[in-house]
Every structure is written in structure tokens, then in C-alpha cells.
Image (spheres, chains in turn orange, blue):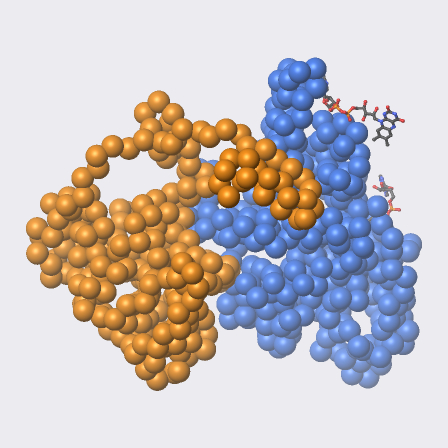
Length: 260
Length: 379
Ligand SMILES: Cc1cc2nc3c(=O)[nH]c(=O)nc-3n(C[C@H](O)[C@H](O)[C@H](O)COP(=O)(O)OP(=O)(O)OC[C@H]3O[C@@H](n4cnc5c(N)ncnc54)[C@H](O)[C@@H]3O)c2cc1C
Ligand SMILES: Cc1cc2nc3c(=O)[nH]c(=O)nc-3n(C[C@H](O)[C@H](O)[C@H](O)COP(=O)(O)OP(=O)(O)OC[C@H]3O[C@@H](n4cnc5c(N)ncnc54)[C@H](O)[C@@H]3O)c2cc1C
């Protein structure tokens, strides 16, 4: 069994502050992490490795420093890492990103392609589904749980707004995973010791067969109209009471505001 | 010269800090209160390789460095000093002497199980009448055919009955003085080997500390560690390494107390302003931070020298002396900054003060460290 996981390096937005005058992110000193949904996807792949001895490849598209997320993935237990980087990929929106990734993925064999649902720095949830479209593969988004029959078929629990769907799908297919679905394991010490001695394959424009016009800034139809930070709301009221009393307080507040 | 951690070490720090924060810190107050050995944490640490950091991969270890190991003990101890010493006693006092002095058979037999954390290690040197003066060993080992027969007792032994393998020192020839001391590898369950009193302690209360009792305990000769009469040298070398671990533990406790203090003084208001706004607070905090950073440099230098294979005995002594005294000062001041709250068990700083004290005592008291440092200087 072969699995490919797409992972993205993102700033840890829980530590990010917004410059109130310019409305831009203050990225200085903010640590970079593996996007949480992707890390859950990585854990999904690793559980399949534990059970079915699956071979896992991780791929990331990003600047030089994105190397760190591939090393972390090595230390968690993946087998192969590909770093997709080229000046021609720079400035990509979700569409151009998915074209570049799909180009690389066409060169790889897999039964299951895993992506995160969305990245915490963009929140679009588009890249996974776009890749599936480019590759003409079946996709299941918002994955909560996956079972594999060891042959061909995946049984997937998919979260929807008002419940769950249970779906069966044959590989190769694409899934996008929710961060709460799988609790990522810790890197293991031996994996960490070896992570920087292992080879990360560097792939650029030359390695993928994609029309240059579909890549980078040129291939990105998205235009940012305006970026602003939402003003701070009122501080809110804090009650430390038991559940019964809390329900009573919430109900009376909702009635007070004519919400119910 | 380069003071920064390598990328590999940074990745390790990222992992161990998250592990300490999420898995170790939430249990710290509970195991202290209940005087309970944190077995569940040992199992979690075992799973990811923390019980065998500086052990070569050929013996089932992680193949990491002593520097990495010192970072692990520091970070674990910043959350919970008990957890820090479980790892330190296991790694420095049991795994290291087998690795450094064991035969190939002994390494094959013990290291994989110890490095994987399936087994925990311990070290028995101290006796009721042989503390600082470790040469005054009264435990005896008498040859008997292919065996030795051991009689005597060891006190204050960390990891106690939770360990499976013990490095134990005994007199094989009293007339030879320190040259008559020999080291043995003894397994739990060996007939004649039992446990005595469990100590009730001021700090590191989750760490198990017990007496080991040997009554006509028969040990096969292949369990002799190193040479006959070479035990005292092994003990001293082992303690050099152990001091790096305890120095890292002390450093972690100090850092943990700093973290709590910085958070608290920004929130707590008196006289209409946060405590952090008083210049007295700021100046004292500056002095404490300077000591903590200086201690870290000493700890890392000692670990680095051990990794380089150069003599580091005095460096380890300086690191332990300075870090342990820093831990005492920082934790005491941390309580002061917390006022009455810091004196209660609602906040972790009182535990940290209690935990800090032992770092000035075990693996050589501060007086012993001063002896080692000055002896190196005056030789
Ligand atoms: C919680 C705990 C865990 C321990 N774990 C272990 C373990 O795992 N294995 C193990 O073998 N031991 C262990 N020990 C024992 C520890 O190493 C000894 O307690 C320590 O070496 C001091 O010995 P002592 O207690 O007999 O004190 P003593 O030797 O009686 O010393 C008392 C005081 O006298 C001072 N002193 C002694 N001699 C001199 C001198 N010549 N000059 C100046 N001052 C001197 C000492 O510095 C000290 O302050 C542990 C102890 C404790 C409390
Ligand atoms: C066991 C115990 C018994 C007690 N018994 C009683 C009792 O019977 N009756 C009673 O009324 N109270 C009692 N107390 C309360 C005790 O008197 C207070 O804890 C003490 O006055 C300190 O106040 P605080 O804890 O609010 O600390 P804080 O006032 O918050 O002080 C914390 C720290 O902030 C710094 N700080 C504060 N103000 C300044 C400043 N102006 N300049 C520089 N630094 C400053 C100091 O470093 C200080 O150590 C008791 C407390 C304890 C722990």
C-alpha cells in the first residue's frame, strides 16, 4: 500500500498578532508548524503504516525553510519526502498551488492521497478538492475516520454540518482530513536523530509537467481586494457557575436580546 | 565556536517541550501529593525513545547525544522534577556504566531492554555508613565457585523497586581499600535481594527511594561489571556523567520556576499596578535570569565535552554545583514573588522549592562538587 500526504508549513496562528494600524500579520518570531489538519492526515497515514505496512511519501510546496516540516515528518515515521520548490511556483493562490502539486503527484504512485481539510493561514479548504479534480480521482472531504479492508476499499466517516455520512470508496482516491480526526503522535527520538541525515528530494519546475502559465503568480486568478482585522468586540461576561445555572443565564440573555 | 543548537537539537527541543507540557506537567502536582511513581509517563517516554537517548542504535537506543539527553532532563524537570530524575538515574547511573564498562554480552543482554524502556535501571552505591565517603563500603561480595555471594544493604536508591536492573557496589577485598570495591549488575528477582524501607521525602516525592537488602544473594561471575577491584573508578566515572543529568534537572526546576514567576507577576496587581512594574521585581528577576542562563551554559558545556570524549569531570561538578544552587535561589525567590499564594499548593512554586533541595545533595553534595573542582585546579 502506498500513501502520499500533502503537508504545508504555516505560522502558528495561535501565537500570531495583528498590527492594529496596518491590519497585517506580525510574523516576526512566530514559530512555524505543520498545518494541524495535515498533521492529523499524517497520523492517519502512520496508523495505516502500523497496520498494513504502508509506504508513506510526504510532499510539501514551499520556500527553503519548509524543509523543517519534512524533517518533522521523517521523525514521525514517514519513508520518503519531496520538497517542491521553484521560483516559478512563488505567489501561487490555491489554484496554482493545486496545479503544481497535481503535477508532482502525477509522477507518484499511490492508493491513497491525504491532504488536510484546510490550512490555518488561508482557511480556503480548496487545495485538496482541486487536486482531486486535476487528477480526476474520487474525493472524500472532511474525513473523521477511515477504515481500510487491506485490499482496495476504504470505508470513511465524513463530517457534515448536521451529522455524518458513511462512504465506501476504492483507491486511488483523495481524502481531506479534519484536525480533530487523528491525534498526531510525537516524533520519536531516533527519528529526530536521523531526520537531518536523510534525503529530501528537491523537485522544481523541471520535474513536473505543468504549463508554466498555470503556476505561481501568473497562474493565480485570486486578487486580494482588502485585508483588515475585525475590531475587538466587547469583553463579554464571565460566570463561574454550574451547568444548570449557566443554561438559565444564557437563556435569559438570549431572550433579553430577542434572539429567541 | 557556536552557541546555537543544531537543527536536529532544535527539533528535539520542540518535541520534548511539547511532550513535557502535555504529558508531564498535568501530573506533576498529583504525583507529588500522592507520592506516586509516574509509571504511565515512563511508558509514554519509552514509546518515543526517551529512555534510551544516548544509546547507540545497535543496542536499541536512539543514537542521540548527551547534549540531547541533558535537554530532555531539563525540559522534563521544568514540568516535573520527579520525571526528570527517573530518566536521569536510569540513563546516567545504569545504562551509561553498562555501555561504558560492560562486556559485549552484557551490552547485548541489558541495553536493548533498558533503552526501549521495557526495563528501568538503578544504581546502588550509598550505604548507611558510606555516603559522601563512598569508599567506606560495608556490603561484601565473596567469590564462591562461579558466583559471588553478596551481603549488605544500600540506602536511598532511586527508582527502587520499579527498576529491573541495578548497578551495585560491594567490597571484594577489604584489605585493598578503594581498590577492593567491585561493581555488579544485579537483576530484580534474584533470590536474596529484597527491598527495605521506602523513604518519605521533602521533594521529588513521586520518585521512589528505597533500601536494597542483600542476604546471601548469589550473583554469577558474568554479572561482574568491569574488573575486580575496578568498582570505585566505575562509580566515580558514572557519577561524573550523572552530575550532568542532575545539573540539567536543577536547571529545569529553575527554568520552570522562572516561567511561573514571569506569568504571575504580570497578572497579579498590588498598589494599583502589576508586580512586574516594581523596579525591585525587575532587578531581582534580571539577576535570576542571568543565573539561569549561566547555569545552562555550564550544563551544555559539560554535556558537550562528554560527547566530545574529553575530560569533563570538573565541568560536570561546576554545572551541578551552580545549577543546583541556582535552583534553590530561583525557587525561593519565586515563592517570594508569589507572596502567600506561592506558599500554598495552589501554585507549583512551593513544590519546585522542595524539589530543588535534593539537587544540592545527591550524586555528590555541593561540598563534594567543590572538592572536585578545587582538586582539578590544585593538582
Ligand atoms: C532522594 C535521594 C535519592 C538518592 N538516590 C541515590 C541513588 O540512586 N543511588 C545511590 O547510591 N545513592 C543515592 N542517594 C544518596 C546520596 O547520594 C547521598 O545522600 C549523598 O551522597 C550524601 O551522603 P549522606 O546522605 O550519607 O550524607 P553525609 O555523607 O553524611 O554528609 C552530610 C553532610 O556532611 C558533608 N560532608 C561530608 N563529608 C564531608 C567532607 N569531607 N568535607 C566537607 N563536608 C562533608 C556533606 O557535604 C553533607 O552536607 C540518594 C539520596 C537521596 C536523599
Ligand atoms: C500560611 C499563611 C497564613 C496567613 N495568615 C494570615 C492571617 O492570619 N491573617 C491575614 O490577614 N493574612 C494572613 N496571610 C496573608 C499574608 O499576610 C499575605 O500573604 C502577605 O501579606 C503577602 O500578601 P500577598 O500574598 O497578597 O502577596 P503580594 O502582596 O501579592 O506580594 C507578592 C510579592 O510582590 C512583591 N510586591 C508587592 N508589593 C510590592 C511593592 N510595593 N514593592 C515591591 N514589591 C512588591 C513582593 O515581592 C511580594 O513578595 C497568611 C498567608 C499565609 C501563606
